[in-house]
Amino acid sequence: MFKSYSLGKIAGIELKMHGTFFLLIAFLALSGLISGGTTTMVVEVLFVLTLFGVVVLHELGHALTARRLGIPTRDIVLTPIGGIASLARIPTRPVHELLITAAGPAVNVVLAALAYTAGLLVAPASPVAGWALSQLFWMNVILAGFNLLPAFPMDGGRLLRAYLAMRGDYLQATRTAARIGRMMAWVFGLAGLFITPMLILIGVFVWFGATAEEAAVAVRHRAATHPLQFVVGSMFGRPTVDAEGPDILFTRPSARPRRPNVVVDADYTIRR
Picture 1: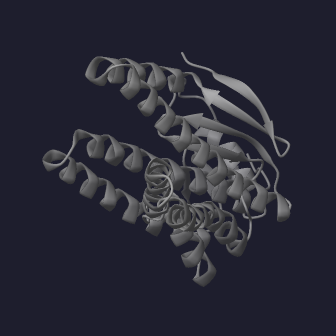
Picture 2: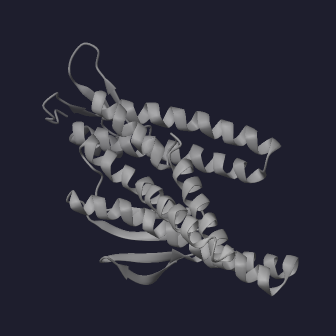
Picture 3: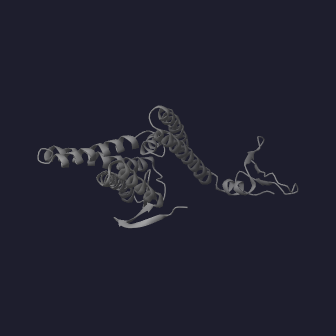
């Protein structure tokens, strides 16, 4: 229904804005105009634009670090819930994923330190500028803290997965991180019942993000470790392993009962 619109390129990476972002700007402008007049409307719109400027820098931290490690970034898309840097491929080494993921929150930490220092210097001469810099400081602190929560699709979930993968299996590390993410989704949902409904929406977002990441990694793992099983299985259904031998039997329920089964040897030779 909504498409993304190109805003140009930054450091050679295309920057896009999802169509729903314009709805967010319109909503904030209208609510600000109704609640406090033109001045409130302008302040709220400027706040959101500044916030997403910080998000762009956050995503550039991911993208430029990935570039240094030989992984290009297709684009960065801004949405009402944050930015998405689409890497051309998934890092194959856990340490690379660790570095790429950590680069985003690191940008926020640096920006927070700069805003805090600048605020101390200019606040005595200009209280308004000092207030604006304090808002920028807290904006980056909150973004860094929120992104470091150990739940997919936030950076903290990926950092946890990378750490666990360095100590064991990548697929199992993903499953563990996804399970922790779903637990945190329940925490967000329950907290939303008492604090704000926005936390419920975040919980739903985290739940589906964790589940989708686990499913995607499971599919990639199966395709990489059992390529022929993956292809034939996608055509004929789920595989069942013969307990008395290495043969793998792929079957698929069908209205045509005479459809033959496909039997594959351990060396991926189709026998019949």
